[in-house]
Image (cartoon, rainbow, N blue to C red; front, side, top):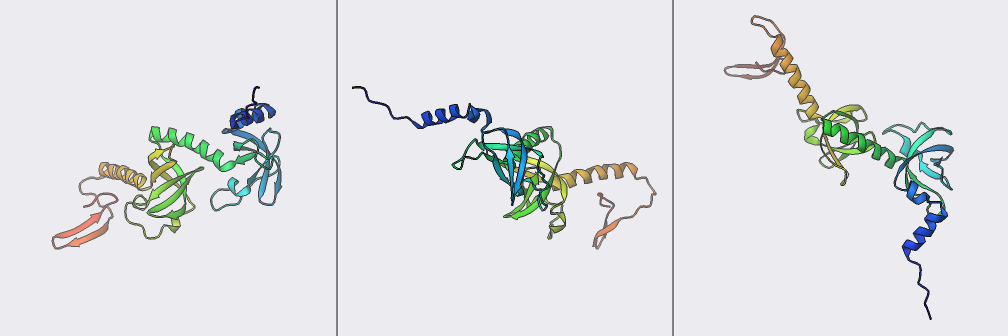
Length: 224
């Protein structure tokens, strides 16, 4: 007498996928475009074309330190974690969608050696966190400025250029530097100043140090 085999987890997944018309394979793990159909308290209800809508916290649509500007009818990019959860709703994430898009762009900028724009929004051990348009990077304290900075408050929540020092998408790590930008700018100013100097020319400078044999003067990137 033949015995009936118990269905495996993969069998259940296949049955679910078939019942959804292949939606699992088509949508899960991808960034898709959806439409905001309602805003309920602190949640945005979004339709991405699945059997059920999903709810995403409004905070995921807001920039650091700002409120979300979202209206019914707006089209947004979201990441589909799961087609359907235990409550029968689609599991969507705006943060994940922004992060995926940001990583794609940042990898290209890193390979090209270009600067990127970010916002310092938090403090962590050894440095600060920077929002690079959806991807979070680490800014070491030593890379904030050319000289030690005691108060970084004026720099926080302000768009600032950074140079990516290294990044690892698999581990989700990005390290950036503001100091590298300042040093590059200073080098450019130094080069321009040297070319503009002429013997007998009178220019202004700042006294940096006084010794027994003279004074050191900063001429805007050049010590004299």
